[in-house]
Length: 388
Ligand SMILES: *Cc1c(COP(=O)(O)O)cnc(C)c1O
Image (tube, rainbow, N blue to C red; front, side, top):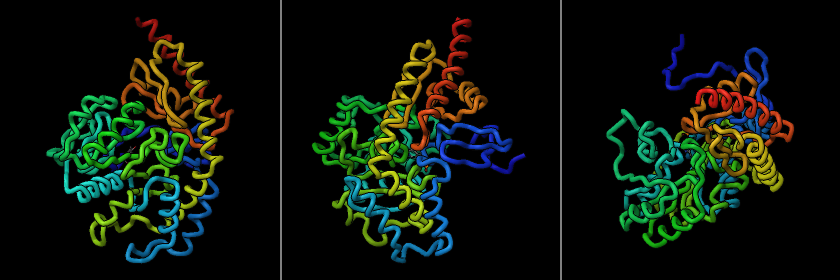
């Protein structure tokens, strides 16, 4: 008996407590958490530095209003622009809101409204970001959608060339499609993106809601594709579980977001900023990013070694600690079997298992997770070959 709208197919687990990469349920069963609240708790559950920062702020002041000067906002914005290609920041409460801000800013700054996004993308659930999302299953029943979006297949350079015109305000992309199946952008496609934005005079928006905040082994994913987005958006990992998002833009866009043009009651709230500041101080350390690269490589290599020989495993790909295992079969039952073993992993579409462990995972935890995955996938593989 639940009074909740059944928008989520709920799992059987209730999380009672968490520490680092370990989550404990209502029966004190321990799980290795390789989803981190969907790329949110990047520093692990109850990270001491973030907990301390929020606790400290909790006894000072919770909320004022964006009419006030909020020192922590200035600090977080400063940290973001110092470590990125952006110059100004607008704070939101979620990824969808950050993308809404990006879409609004792109329209206002260019005076145009056509935006090209990618098929299989995910940009959020608000009416604007729903239209930006190139997946019919997410849009179904909510029309008529905001018009003036068009979609091209990821890595289809010809389609991109055709779709972008002088009337295009922006191209909006993820460098790795998260929800869409852990699909990586080709280098030649990112080169073409740059060229086309330059040629047609349109803005480049990179949605870093999932790939940002160290997830792929660099502070932001776009760095590894040599992109310099006019706008990029953040949320998920920014507060390590405290709801907060951000839109970061280049200096040339400042005038378009002048006083009174956009706003948010809660965006940049002092508690959220306390969390975000602590997160960024930790994530921007060279050690942290090197750790993500090392552990990501180790995890991906072990997965390839142990899982690639299986017939049901089609591809293993990713960057840093964002990894997809594409299977030839639907993965819902496999995820359930993993949970039974004590491993929490996510799907990305019907046939991809998505791994998003927290950055604090150890080699031993990687070994454990890989052997649990191997056991589950081997069993499914044997069943599959019997069926054939
Ligand atoms: C999760 C996600 C969003 C939506 O973020 P919300 O905080 O749920 O609104 C947008 N873009 C990408 C790439 C995401 O992964």
